Length: 116
Image (cartoon, rainbow, N blue to C red; front, side):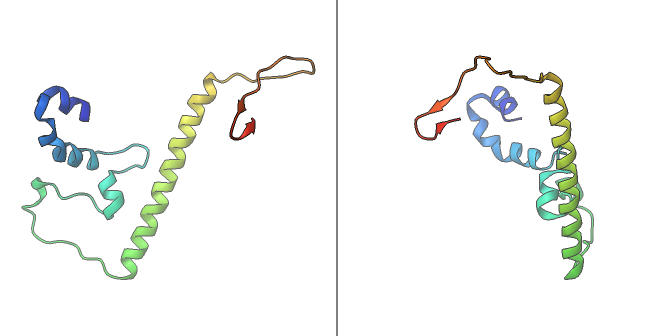
């Protein structure tokens, strides 16, 4: 997204950085299953199109805590799903390594940490 701003706006891309940040924070992120704004504030962002709506839902006390716990659980589940998907992609290209006695191998030696 930032690359597109730099390419489109050239030298004055810095002027559009807040708009790019707003767009990113309100874009759906597949790994967490919601937008970063919604993750942080617990509700979808009210964009300028929504500002004409009158009324706002107020949460108090235990409702806020319960809703936050549910959001955290949902985010953890979505991150686990994304992590498993990435692991399956990595495992598709991985081949099992088998070593036998007498095989040659390279050993990484780090001056600070010793042998790995």
